[in-house]
Image 1 (spheres, rainbow, N blue to C red):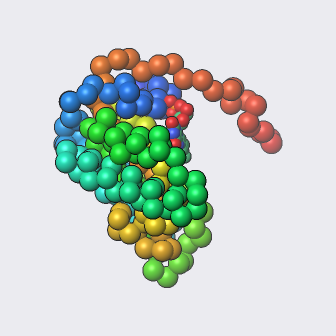
Image 2: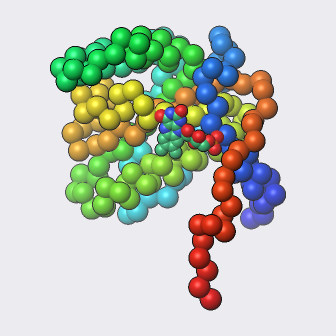
Length: 196
Ligand SMILES: Cc1cc2nc3c(=O)[nH]c(=O)nc-3n(C[C@H](O)[C@H](O)[C@H](O)COP(=O)(O)O)c2cc1C
C-alpha cells in the first residue's frame, strides 16, 4: 500500500480547532461525512481490542435536547454545591445550536476491567484524533470541548454511560468557509531526547 506522505504530513499539521462562532449558521454537515468520521474513530488502536469508545450524535432537534439536558444538569448540580452562575447556564442552553453536529464521546469500561483506565482513555483520545483529522480532510470545522458538564457524574447516564465509565468530551462539527489558521507549537527538538 502506498500513501502520499506529503499530504498526510500536511493534514496532521494543518488540523486546527475551529470553534462554533466560525461555523456557517443554518448549514449542516452531510451525515455521510459524519458517518465516515465515526467509522474512522472505530479504527483507533485499542489494547486487547476492548474498543472502549462510545458516541452519541446530536443534530437537528437533538442539539436542543442536548442543550436542555446540559443546562438543567448544570443547574441541579451547581445549585447544590453553590457554584451556579446564570451566564454559564444560559450559555449551556444556547451554545449547542451553533454547531451542525455534536458528538458526545464516552469511554466504556471493559466488563472485566482488564485494561488500566489510562489506556482506555488513551484509546478514546486516539479515536478523537482520527475524527478530527477526518473532519479536517473533508473541510469540516471541528473542535473538542471538555467544558460544561463533561466531568459531572450526574451527566453520565444521559449518554448511556455507567458509573465506572467516563464522559470524555464533546466533538463539535460545523460547516466552514474560511481557511484554517496557522498553528503554534514549540519546536519538537525541545521535547525529544535521542539516545544512540
Ligand atoms: C483534551 C482536550 C480538551 C480540550 N478542551 C477544550 C475546551 O474545553 N475548550 C476549548 O476551547 N478548546 C479545547 N480544546 C482544544 C484546544 O484549545 C486546542 O487543541 C488548542 O488550542 C490547540 O489548537 P489546535 O487544536 O488548533 O492545534 C481541547 C483539546 C484537547 C486535546
